[in-house]
Image 1 (tube, rainbow, N blue to C red):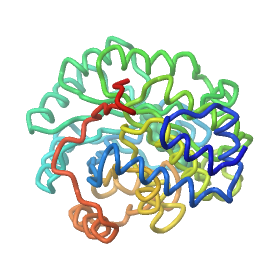
Image 2: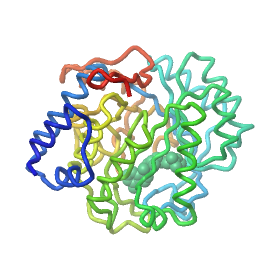
Image 3: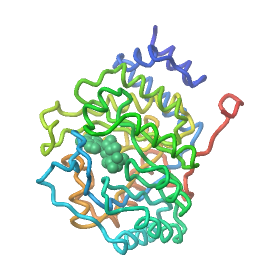
Image 4: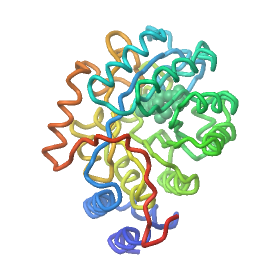
Length: 350
Ligand code: SAH
């Protein structure tokens, strides 16, 4: 097998087998070819516009024990916070002022935020004319249905890894089947569904990452967000090796080849690992950035991992800063909502 041939074929057909994906993931010499192909596919299918999604990190309280995550319940060093409905809405208003069209409400699995609490917040955010993404973890189908009826448009729930044994090792007390159930429920309820994985977890293999990419295609995801696992000193995985950007870029670029018209963010974890990591991602298949509009202590204490890029920045400056960086690479900020538009692939709408 020759990586350049496989990449050229995937650029046209948007298919690769598990072994072919593995071959490319293993061949670090093929990076420049892979990233350039993913960049062309991005341009052809989703264009030069970059969609900005304003992130509101509304609670860092979490009942789960995910071994990689700083928010895990057993981390006693992290000062905890929970924004009030008024604070969340004030941030949504600011997102509108800054010119964003989408708000992403992300938080730990905080039991305080029942459907009764969330539904009025969702309705008020939607009344501002924003598209709304939720990212609050695993809930019942009834809750997902209630959020959808209240107006939520999209839901982001990473599968984290499609290796069931690895998933259950790193997410004690959680079940892989329930995570899949959530993703299926969300699809059936009509959400735009985003998922994704951590890249570089201890003992995760490249073959497992190849399977992850095929899973994204099988799920028919609308959005894929992924990034490097960054060891957090306040978690059990604190001694894992230092993260690098390239494996995440490879998985992301291959995802763009196989799912050419979806939304793919250049993630904060990528920027944290390498300065300009997000720009490199945007030149290797990504078309979305999620600037953080959370303020004050909350902005500092949503500490999934150390050194989070832009944590010390003033959120009112992020849009201008990003717009300038995008201009330099020939890209513009989208003025639309940036919903997933399904495009014909070789003349066939799939
Ligand atoms: N409770 C929500 C949000 C979780 S935090 C949910 O379950 O979906 C959002 C994402 O941060 C997670 O899905 C995970 O992939 C990522 N994350 C957590 N810890 C991380 C770490 N140490 N390094 C990189 N990414 C991390």
